[in-house]
Length: 333
Image (cartoon, rainbow, N blue to C red; front, side, top):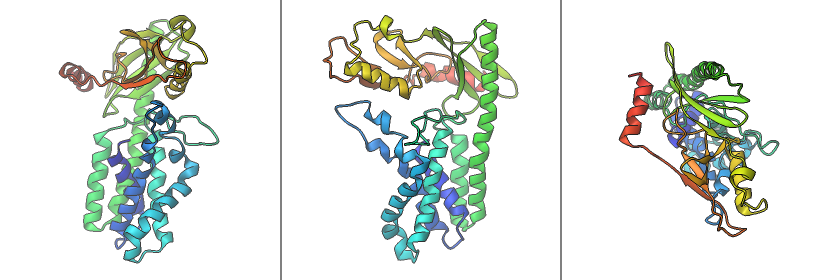
């Protein structure tokens, strides 16, 4: 999730267990600690464009790292904020731990994938119940936390935290409805998917992208799940097969290794960009949910040296025409 949402969620839990005299400080510790795990984005390399993909949402987001991550937050924030307020280090660490503990679980509610059990497992958990940015989730938290702090009312923070539990639960119901619609579409096409997932589109839990895989292809469709269910049939693309699509690629080259790293990150939803054979795309994400127009990809080159990395690229086609298409689907124009 975005840093603001992570911060206000962390603050809502720390304020929920504080008294009115500690509310401001508890909120500050919870907010800063709730954002802290995303400092892993600083782990980057100019020589290895994919390094950040391996470390983002990895050890700092592990449930097993919460005691250590929150301890680091406490060691930094206690002398800066709470020591002069008469707090003990144990109190500071508690509020930091509460804020820190919310981060990974909220990220796991999104679609990106979070390594909750690292180092015991490198599995990326993605429950697909909420978009990485969703105003309907964030704004109530922000408003409730503002008034909780202003009025010194911990019960408002508890309502905020309850909302943080309720909204992803509603997203789970919406996800299941979208997946059911996706299975019906596949059956109508006489397809037997090997796997099928529904992911919320940008900023809402009303319009979903359904992706399913058959033996040779990926299919993407949009599903709007309101009081009724409406489907928007979409596009399909051939699955990446390196021996067929990139026969020139040497298996032990760095580019081949980078494709496998990108495959792990993308949960094996890889295909060649239909407009550029040297670009490998993650099929799971696009601005328009029934299109295959990837938000990120890696680019390779036949002329690259054996130890040369693939290039990581992001794509944001936020044109007026795309926004219009998205809004028509979202609001069922």
